[in-house]
Amino acid sequence: QSGVSEGVVTLLMSTYPESVNSKNGFGYTPIAEARAMSNTSIVTLIEKFKAQHDLQTDSESTDNNTTKINKTKSKGIKGGKSSDNGNTQEDNIKLKSTVTDLTERVNYLESLLAEVAQIGAELSTETKGETRDAGEESSVYKLANRLASVKPVGR
View 1 (cartoon, rainbow, N blue to C red):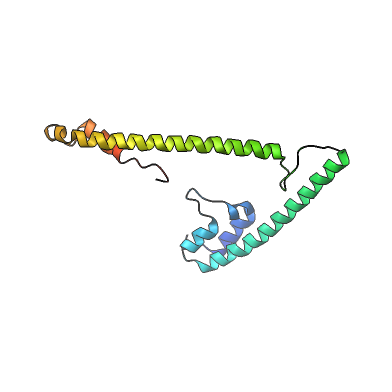
View 2: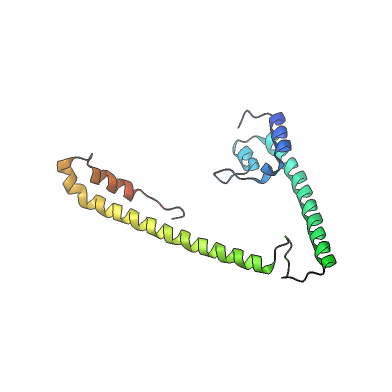
């Protein structure tokens, strides 16, 4: 955080170089975290490390793709057309299909959650008169308010 030393960051980046592009649970990379803390010396350090890491990773990726192409040519294998990362078009089609299916499921679950929240809001409104006698501690009243407060992500 704000009291992080450059030595610690250097050690972490050297030990776990792939972490420079990793995102935490909130979707922030180490650079974004350092920027949020206004720690310019750490931002500069991570940016330099990231540039070196990305250059090395790009170089290794190019070397690996060249090796794969050469092996395929030497074996005389004729398969699906390969993309830059070595996947065939068939693999890409399967991946896109899976992403589409998952997107549809997420959309369905979000709409279902919105309906649950709507039911909670309606139930909360209907039970207001009844809860005067039972008090706001009634289970139905608590359930209605909790359901009404449910908010799907992205809505």
